[in-house]
Each structure stands twice: as C-alpha cells, then as structure tokens.
Image 1 (cartoon, rainbow, N blue to C red):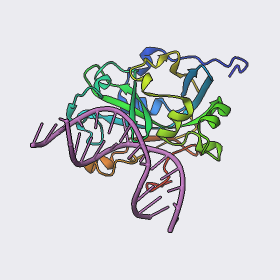
Image 2: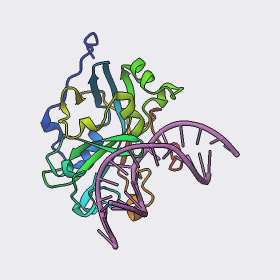
Image 3: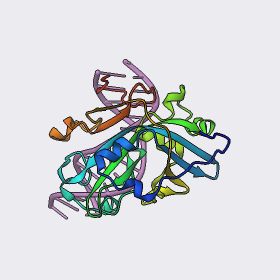
Image 4: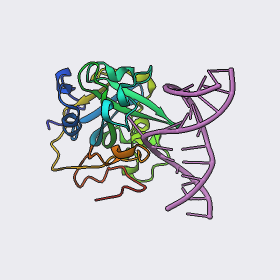
Length: 207
DNA sequence: CGAAGGATTCTCT
DNA sequence: GAGAATCCTTCGT
C-alpha cells in the first residue's frame, strides 16, 4: 500500500451485491473502519459467519420472521445490522436482495489503526489479539454501538474499506448456536487461514 | 404487562 | 470447564 495516508478507501455500494456466502468470503481481508471523536479505529476482517434467514434456524430472521429488530435485514445489502446481546453489541453486514433477510456476522478483526484507542476501550485485554478476537469484543474496541444500526457501510463514519488479499481461507461450522438444530453443522463460518486474531475460546476449537 | 431467552464475555474453580 | 452477569427483544396471557 502507499502508506503515508492514514485514511481508508471505502468500497462501492455495489460491492455488497453478491450472494451472502460469497460476500462472507470476500469480506475477509477487507478493513472495517470506525471514525469517532476520539480517533479512527480499524481492523482487517479475519472471521465472518453467514446467516441466511429463510432456511437458517440460527438466524434471527429464520423463516422470514420480520420484527422491528430484524427490519434492516429485509432491506438492500450493505447496511449495518447491530444487535445487543447480553451486555455486548454485535455487528453484521446486511446481504442479499431486498426482502431477503440475510446477513454476515463479523466475528473477528485484526487491529491495524487505533490500537491505543482499542486498548483504552478494552482495559481487560492483556494481549493484542484479545482486543478484537470476538464479535462482542471488536465492536467495543472499534466503538460500534446501536447508534450505527442501519448505517450504510460505504460511508463515514463506519464503513468497509479495501484491504489485503488473504493468503488462504478456511470454512467450517459456526459458533455459539448449538441450540439451533441442524443449522449448527452448516459450514458458513469463514476465516483467514493461520491468522492469530480468531475467535473461538470455548468448544469448537478446531484447527 | 409479565416472563423467557439469546449470533457473548469474563471470572473463578 | 462451568456458571453468572445483564440488557433488550419477542411472545404469551
């Protein structure tokens, strides 16, 4: 990369116009950028999961269930779907055509900009890789909140930027949805091969 | 209006 | 490895 410019180049809105499973794969290596008053924090996306509502029991929009919460998933692709889980916030990239409730969950990123800011936001993290190696962790590190719900991901202050080309990509079963029947086995989790900034602390610790 | 559950994370044993 | 924390949404009465 050219280097001296700290700013990132957002993707075009047309980038998101592809099948959800393909988008989940294409997002690997891209950069998730969040600009705040405190500064800019950004990380390379290294782990994603696809959620395809109509036939995916693990998705909030399973069987096309439409609620105030999942509303944005029924809209066009490329918007942020933020969701509060327990005490944490998760972020998804809406995918699929209009009226198709599909999305890609961002599970982990590798910090590239604003590491000091991330450390400040996550006092508990002892290692660099603990800053963003989980869906709830990365949102806190980057400063993503429910205020970003429905935000278009090709515009400041929250967007996907062009990044690197991953050396290799691995696919496998998703995590944390073991109460979702057979949907658990779908290989809809994608990650950059060999990258240390990957989630998966408990079970599902496969190579 | 009240009750149950969840795409998680942290801490202690 | 197991269990609690803790906030919002969804569903039932």
